[in-house]
Image 1 (cartoon, rainbow, N blue to C red):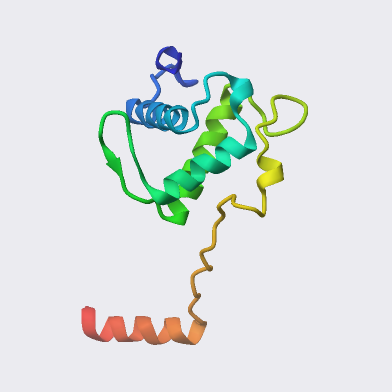
Image 2 (spheres, rainbow, N blue to C red):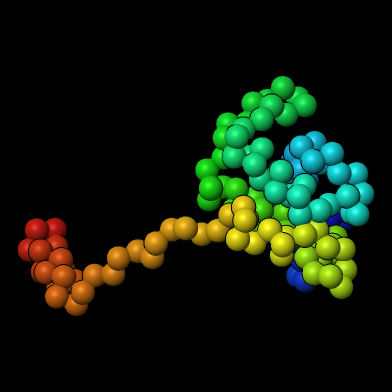
Length: 135
């Protein structure tokens, strides 16, 4: 389906991106056993995330090591984008795959702290040092 679509400038979609979504969906279907849009529930998405955190062996025998929280967050986001593309919205107006009820329970999030910013004085010292030693 996506392989035949084109961007606005008529160039084909990126093959790597298409393959990444295909792999994500195949793994999701394998782990959750969902076959129809109505099968996708918050509990199944939650179970999928827990399996990702623990690691698993795919049907082709490839072992997937346990995923870090940030990786689970990224895969969760990608899955949500794909489900929205398919018309499965995370709200009661359409198919509800229950993500709202999971928020705060096990839905991964960005737990990273913001990077520390340098003060103007520190920046001035850095550039002064760099000018003296690197030029």
